[in-house]
Length: 434
Image 1 (tube, helix red, strand yellow):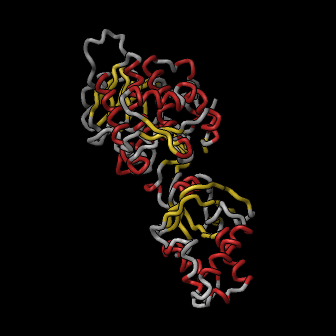
Image 2 (spheres, rainbow, N blue to C red):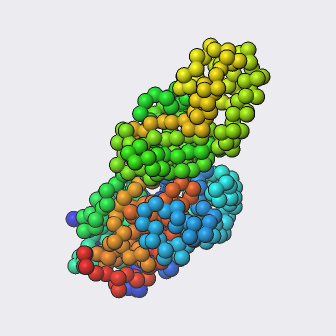
Image 3 (cartoon, rainbow, N blue to C red):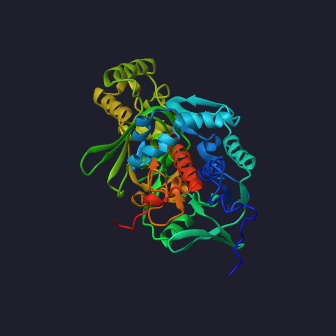
């Protein structure tokens, strides 16, 4: 076995905190631990810190959501109560103040989504990395394979290069989404080896797969300001209802409303769920009928298929005409009232049968992870192993799209970093299952 590497000249007073994972949670945990007097070792397998962070929000980085605590928790889909203390430690306003203090100006857009003014995710990741350097956090390019323990207490970590002693370890390894950035589920294995329960892992905030080829016909078409709902066909209930932007792809539906909807779909089977799109939410049936009559009057002598360009994007016309059942070559002045009403029905409820979700590798976040029943919500400390903390996506906590998941990473990492530096975990330990 390799010789454990120990720090010299720390006088037995300074705690060594090992942070595993250099993403959003890991960088923040390292910063908070170092700010609170710990010697911090940050382990990252990639050649660049914050690799996943740099591609979030299509490279723009939706840092947080500028809302109050109650609204924030309403957007957390899994275990929101677990986050009360974390949000108290670092809420959205604190996050905004933190990054602006690091020289990154922010702006708030529709839906209170917060982005860097530059629209560059690199600015957020670089600011965190720069702060780590200022605090003399030691960054080690190595893959951690195990957390070392003795007598139920953390003693260090094992890497490909050897073993490192540590008084505390914070696991910030992420989930299983975007594995090419390093989030391949390794943290789940290490947590399980230490006795922790891993709740079932599946994709969340992931595109929806259609059952059929309707979306493929409209591949690349983006719709703004549409109404979007998902209905459970087994009971007729609406499981998700939203307004926003949608993208048709070769496999189905993507875009903000589709991604958020995925977080509400459980036990998805080919015939269970159906997406229903309101193409004209600003127009009720009566007003839409008046608009159609106006357009039909203007294009009375055209073929039906050539009279819808004022109301529909080009890629959507052929599918809409086919679904309406109206002969595409029928002259507009011959379209019957019944045919017009069927068309209105399609405008107000364009149906897309759903067959499943895209793979977890394409998900923005992972649902599932380390059971929060085994983690103290006031410190993020393990209830099973002294000296072990968790932060970020490795925990069984996730939220909808809009900056909420990054805020969860920053908030849980703040608690973990502060308490790991102080060693404030002992009073919370208890045997598993008690």
